[in-house]
Length: 326
Image (cartoon, rainbow, N blue to C red):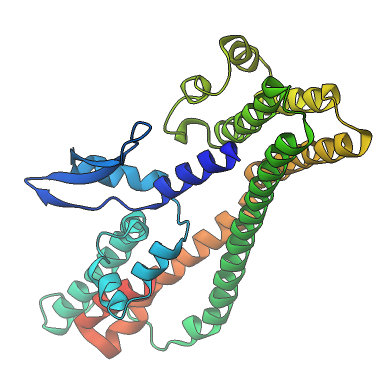
């Protein structure tokens, strides 16, 4: 139960967005600080820079709870989404392609304007497409590419979410089983299974995310494992497998009957299975030949839009092509 409690607190804290009011590029945040036993929790005011706030967006995860849903399902959420458009991380990642499209559209507009006003010699031909047949024929292929990429990305995300849900449920199961099956005169064995279940989740996080983890693994485990156990994990070739091996050994040594031992070992086996699933998702991206080909095709397609749209929209093709590309 303690492992579940700790994981729940960490997940909730990571999922809530930072809230505050910027003053001269400094944000003042109200953070709940844990209280001592017998006292109430208190809020602490912390001042951080806007740069730190924006950098923290890399580590945020959308984990919905009742409070998140109450803030999300509001009548003005559409206006909030439009107002935060230029602060969107997705839009910022598209600055390069959008800048290329805007530059191409600007060149087309300037060239055609100078040509129509007689600034350029009449020998200069028009660069606009005589008709939109090429784009109409390839538009269907573009839509199929986008649908396939979107479906594949969502499938990978949803599979990872199901795997994490399985890990969370099995951590709850094994800690509850340790508290129920193991006699009360074996408190160290109970705590050992609980602590190594927590260590499994944290080593798995470090194994999968690498440098993206906010704290290094050793400092993240020093309050969970003893110094000897911590050194044993840090010196292991595969830290996650080491945690599973210790859990299996503790289940084997527990003074319980064979059925209860089989239930504990089944949860450990699920830990091994979910580790393999996570590694498969991490180490098997979409084929690079496909992603590169589709990216090049989309880049050519969106940069060809101004050549086909200038005749109908004039200078308006610049914002239109940017909106279509985004």
